[in-house]
Length: 309
Picture (cartoon, rainbow, N blue to C red):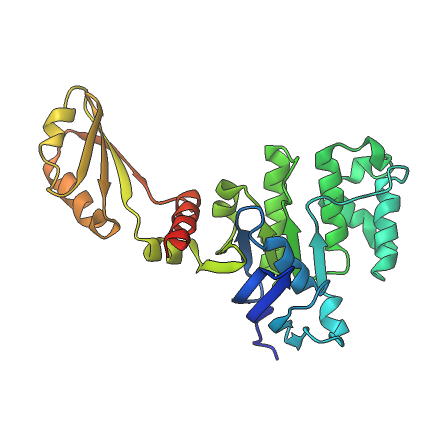
């Protein structure tokens, strides 16, 4: 159906040696969404990815990919053909060139070999296309891995630690590609520990712990749910920090950092009222810097919350 989610997991469980690697997990991901899949090592992320890819079947629950039920032995081949995957550690034949390697994968996926040059150009490997993979750097091998994942025009792309080994310029280029894919309706799942990157480049977050999904939603959704404090740094005219501190409303944490700077800690719901109060009553104020809870803050909050609960 046209309005079906790209990925739908319903109460999925996968057990190894009587331990639940994935435990009663439900998740819905729409077409064109980019999702950051987060969790400590051993949280179940890789198992979940393999379940979605069809490399293993769940012991309980249902998985639907592009509207097709994919948990039986007779998984829909149509859905399977529209999945692209970049594993964290991808192996290549060192004696083959980048162009030969991509052509090899293209034949496996029944994708036109003539399109390989365009894909290599897209990932920034055109000039190294005829160089042996054994002489590639870690970042170049990672880009070649992304190139093979893009073969076949996937509608769902799953990437495990995709920016490992990439310099800042290439990381930006990678996320440009992700953005283009999203805009064309491709669903992208990124499993990574690079939380600062993911905060800026993904629309939805899914956090796992011990096989369970402990939080999911947009970063704004997670901020509302976590209700963590907001931090505001005030910069006053030189020597006016103490005068400014006297005008801070009651119930707001206030710490002087020097003679012209204050750090405030306050509940998120009071942020607007406090800023209005300061702008009206503190003429000595020169600058304001607002720091909302970061993805790293939220990640640690939900991990700790799940331990307590």
